[in-house]
Amino acid sequence: MQKLAGRIAVITGAASGIGRGIAVAFAREGAHIVVADRVNESAAAAVLSEIAEAGTRGLFVRTDVSDEASVRHMADVALREFGRVDILVNNAGIFTESLLEDISVEDWDRVVNTNLRGTFLCTRVLIGQMLARRDGRIINIASQLGQIGGTSVPHYVASKAGVIGLTKALAREVAGRGVLVNAIAPGPIETPLLESETEEWRSAKLAELPIGRFGRVDEVTPTAVLLASADGSYYVGQTLGPNGGDVML
Ligand SMILES: NC(=O)c1ccc[n+]([C@@H]2O[C@H](COP(=O)([O-])OP(=O)(O)OC[C@H]3O[C@@H](n4cnc5c(N)ncnc54)[C@H](O)[C@@H]3O)[C@@H](O)[C@H]2O)c1
Image 1 (spheres, rainbow, N blue to C red):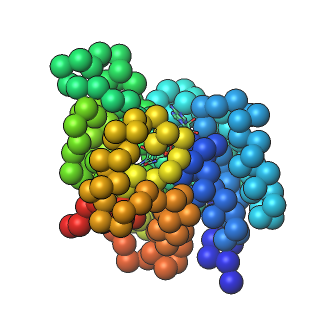
Image 2: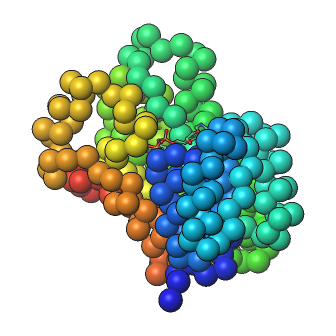
Image 3: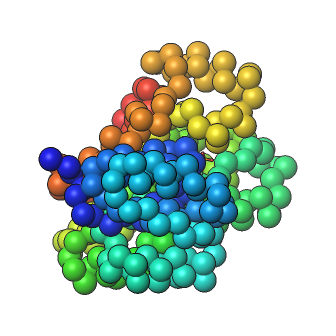
């Protein structure tokens, strides 16, 4: 039996990497998917065809999660086309490296506004209709760096620690009203985001990872399916860590 049959999911940043993997995994479990990404439609063609192959409906809505008007438009289209949104995965994220003393205000704002403000904006615009039905799941993609920190990534770490804090605060607000909010904090996963890392970083990270290798997208997606499905009905405000042992809490 499919775990998400007939459910409607908005997944931000679903044109690439982890978001794309979650979109396809959800579709294989029977969910219809709104692909909300800032890329143009041709860059979303691959995920849309994978969703179609899985036999559910995929709808692309070009969205900048850091922009309130764009997020409102995405929600309007999703609700007009599907009537409701049951699951929101706040996955869109960007990563840049800089020592704190070198970081520009613009770079700080870009990273924090995408990763944290975007999570707030998408959640705010979709949570009302979940609460009205007393039914909804929100899954925030954080990072293990938001738990342990990291050098040369203060803006990224702050944004992801913020996502974890927001997850806990909101989970307490809404768990009693039918909406479950949780986070996933992956370790280093082979996606285009990781390709920007230097060889030095890659070999140093591999040496310290207990499992001795980077993760694959399909090693993160089952956690998202768990949190989105009936199997995840007792998870509230948790941060689950498919991370190869990089963080042990
Ligand atoms: N890859 C890793 O090692 C890793 C580890 C921990 C956490 N994460 C997090 O996982 C999430 C997905 O990362 P990924 O590795 O799949 O990266 P990715 O670069 O492959 O995909 C990110 C997607 O987000 C989209 N996006 C970026 N800014 C956006 C915006 N303003 N509005 C809408 N869409 C936007 C991009 O177009 C892209 O499709 C991110 O939040 C990232 O921080 C990744």
